[in-house]
Image (cartoon, rainbow, N blue to C red; front, side):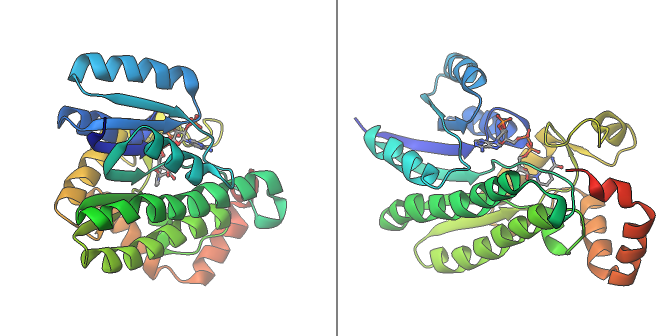
Length: 264
Ligand SMILES: NC(=O)c1ccc[n+]([C@@H]2O[C@H](COP(=O)([O-])OP(=O)(O)OC[C@H]3O[C@@H](n4cnc5c(N)ncnc54)[C@H](OP(=O)(O)O)[C@@H]3O)[C@@H](O)[C@H]2O)c1
């Protein structure tokens, strides 16, 4: 039997992905939750289906492998899921110079942020095109707006997501499929190594948003067909400031706080 009205969310066991899942469950979407945390996935499957009375499918999958998108697609076909909403949210972060980075970590980031994200759009987007409807939200970042040292792999892969999403949006508009890029700024989640970034301090000083606020802005923007969503006034201001900051100032900052950029 086909399950309709499914929202597929990658990286849905914590942070922004988890909050998106809660919002869509409240709106009575059935869920396909995907993450590489099997225990949390099982817990969420039971919790969401009992609280919201929806169908919840949970797929344990490392999305940073070459065949991850294909495996997810096979799961969708085998379980006869009609995906109405695709949210490519899974991601991770590390600081460090390009030449100091672990090649394995760098490769996993490229596979997760670029390879799997774009191929899931391809596989799932095809069916949306056939049905003439659907929503895709790809999670980028405000770091996609400027090229900073110390986050070359992260920011450049997020830049790919932003550009790819804009092209896809224009292509899919013709078929009735809505495509959005969510570009959060600093958000209090598990993304950051607590030894490098103090999330509690960030929240206390009002620099960081909560995952719930970001997810709420994202889902509202997705349903109102926004091209790019930058949640929060401070994030918008920071994005603007980063765009206009000249590279000589970035170089001076790089020299002054070199140790920060050296962490991997
Ligand atoms: N927090 C911020 O300040 C911020 C700012 C801009 C953009 N973003 C983006 O927002 C998205 C969500 O991040 P978040 O802040 O909510 O952080 P988070 O709480 O760490 O969530 C990331 C999710 O992605 C999953 N994930 C990571 N690698 C994976 C892999 N190889 N296979 C499957 N799942 C994987 C994580 O599962 P595990 O925990 O099991 O690894 C986790 O569920 C990311 O794309 C991030 O780049 C975040």
